[in-house]
Length: 374
Image 1: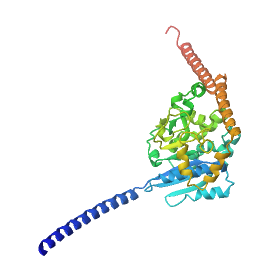
Image 2: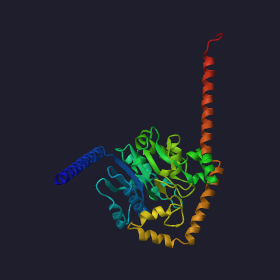
Image 3: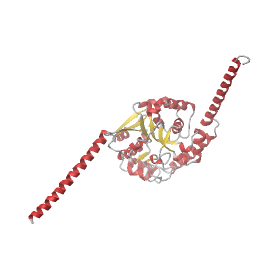
């Protein structure tokens, strides 16, 4: 009887040893996979633009980005600004910084001075909307980067967006569903910018081909167009769409899902609270609950809640007035005889006529030079 027990115990021990060996083997394989990942780590540069007013929203954006980041990678976060006066706010943003997830503030004030006089600013726009134009020139060591507005939350690993193949395109971006949902804006993109509304992209989420930006002298072209024509509807976004035309890779709206003008997306990777659809102003907008899920654990949560509770009827009426005024502005731009597209078409027509005249003169001179009787 004792011998039987001993044999059973032996077999059990052998099974345990075998399982332990298998587990150890699996652990070693997993460790090797982890080591391989660490050896092949990528660095992902991500840019934001913000001023003092937008730092609380940036904090929530960074929190969501960091919580969903693949920590086997390295993330370099750059906050473009033209002067931050609230030292406490800045310090709070910098608390996100740690090894492999660095956060730094980059002053673009001097660059902004180069174009400030020519800037077109309206309503809720600030100079910060133009900061993304400076990235390629200020960071010559980078060939590719992501730009994000501060009024967003990220629900997936942002490195997946970075890995989008750009080819020879200047940017990868998502069509602007807010523009596509309003007939006056659709008309504006086509009759003023010369761009089909279905290809007009939102500039709040961009994968930027910085190498191509430099090769195409994008900044110089932007400055030239800024002097030539003042877009007043979507401002910097209009300049980007015009200058990037036919060099845009369009992405799925899952990487720039907007509360305004879009069908309800059950699994957005990134939500962009653009225009007046801010969850810290309106509790009932689509995807507000996703914003507050991250905001509730943020030090700025009381500030954001206070903004929501104090956003009264007068504020909401002002938003409604702003939206109506923007539509009216788009209509006026379409009806202008000197809008961008009409001026460009006239210039192209004149140039074509000039070339035709030159060609005719050359042919006439050649005929005159031919010997008589030939």
